[in-house]
Length: 74
Image (cartoon, rainbow, N blue to C red):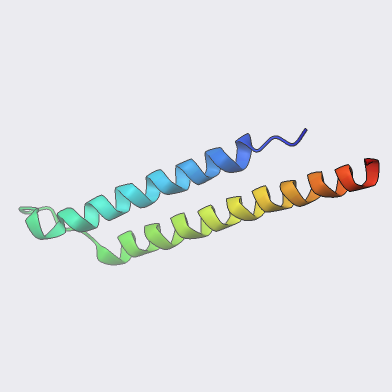
């Protein structure tokens, strides 16, 4: 059986990273003295998106391989 745990945990990590970056961006207008580097946060958002997309592709590939095996066997 195919183990989807790896891509799912990767998607969870990417989602958490996205949430952290979004929280820092949302808090920027209210921060006193602490500046938020928007370019760094944008890179973090783009990295999280790319990581999520890569893990989705892994899950899709695992599903496709599982279907192919079942097709061959059954």
